[in-house]
Length: 204
Length: 223
Image (cartoon, rainbow over all chains, first blue to last red; front, side):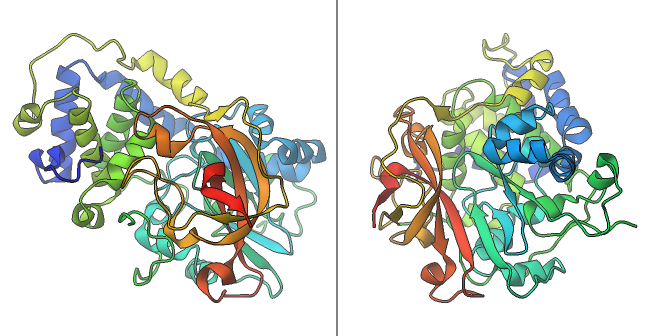
């Protein structure tokens, strides 16, 4: 590698993507390289267990528990592990806090790095060429496409995830949420608010 | 110099299209299969995540541009399986293979949840950081892998040759420019460096906006 001067072997597979996947699955299963039950277990993990509700738990805890917030600032990976959250593509986590002065937004311009144990599988827009190309150069125009306009005076800091560090945005706690418990707070925390393309929702 | 994946700052891509939240973002059933196969085969131990990223970046630029996200994954997986001798070109062409006993690295269903929850940490001990938080540093120009021509690197072209400020120091991490090519992990101190958007783009959307990148020590010199 790189093998630029050879034909790419993948072109030997059928051109239809669904058939390509099927063919590869057949080959790998027959060769003892993949266990079909393991494929089901992987999907079970990311379709049933791991998703943005876990990141929302972290945010709600950070909003409600100053000691947890302090631990998150000190060592985010260790702090979220105390909630039983860890794993692949979240081995090294840094939580970044939105403040009246700074709005944080996360991108991976080179591929699609994303904090899987906290947010699950990335949405298509996060992996799109448009987001990867534009988030670093014109984040405010991108935010407008999500319906977000930042207040005058708030700077944008865009985190391009170029290593194995994964960033979790801690959105600002909405006003009028003083009486809410952690579960009620977590319900206000959308996936996009933890990427930085959204804000935490107002209570109903 | 650059590859097609290095698109930060590029013009011409049009609007970002947000999606509904609250659902698992698989748009087609085969996307599920592509993800599961890639993760399961990655567990065989034949390659690192850096090698896997490089395989996607090494797709023909025409394929990279026309393939959807999971098509890139599947194409890179097929290329890697052949490159590592796990699958033959004849098997890919046939779409099937002779039955064989389980590979020693086969990821079993019972091992999936523990493996995913454990992950693969990339921090390594040692490494005396040459820079401290607050230091001004400048990135390499041009952005390139100095070990392997055309090889994998994590310094995007848009950030090459720019000065910024170290804001986080992460200790030593596996060096992808080496690890992607089987040259060992060669851990180096890793930093988060903040750049003024006006420096990167000539003009910022608003004065004071910033872009940060995670950069290994050998990408940097003191500014």
